[in-house]
Length: 363
Image (cartoon, rainbow, N blue to C red; front, side, top):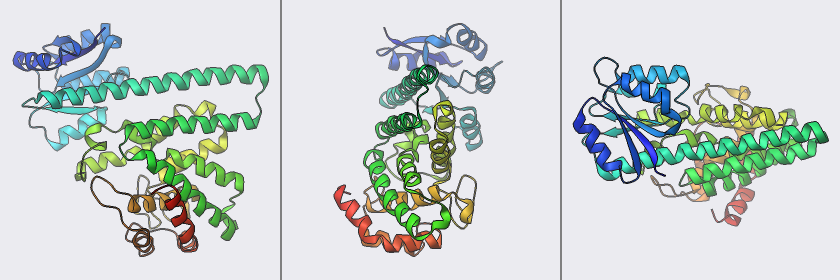
């Protein structure tokens, strides 16, 4: 059975053109105004895979529809693509604040419309599948806790499994994250072990290092909530897109919070620290919280260096790879952000080890 798409536009021509583009893959529902759309959503939203919504409509406009959807909590499970002609930056920003997934631009291009709708629908279905898996695992664990009083080691292994599942989702979502996650874990291990050895004041132990290494796989988990139009853009992002991309730090924390009941405290704390703060900078000019100095958790500081190092020595759609030696000196010269002097001392001392890890992993 085909999935359903709701098209909401007061212009009959727009409704018909979009219906013609999408009808081969989807069953089409149509609404000519916001009031009619809300009535359909009230009765049938669970059957709808996505909604294409015009903003400028008489009586009840698109923003009013978004307001109701946000208030009712419908945005979480129903992706919305805005039918847009010339939309101001202010209007687009407001749409993203409501939780809109993407925009369908006029005049309509058949391939782009199909691709945007398919990408968003598939992403939401993937998120639902992930949530179902997490819910199933959560229930299973709760039953096990009551009947068997599962010991800490078993919970520890379960946490690692959850991290692997979430890391796999990121790999499947981003064109470059598969190898990146593996590399970051390897570099994180080398740097963290050196910090443990040289700076005992940070209180790192082998067990804590293991947790940091494992949790480093989640540093970019929030990217599964970033629209394809931004995440998979073949080139550098413009300022508006970059600001939205930066929200992957806080969006990732929202994902982790949604499964907090099954986290061992150590894993939960470190995963959250890394996810939220791996783009902070020692001088306070990072994001999202502009933390400075050692207010930045040491776990996030370590992963930040590992993340930048891998980004430099890896090829990206918008740049060629730097040599390992070039990357090493760029970081030490402060060309890629400001890091802790202590961390940079550790980085100097593990140069050869990092290069061996990169070579072993095939860069």
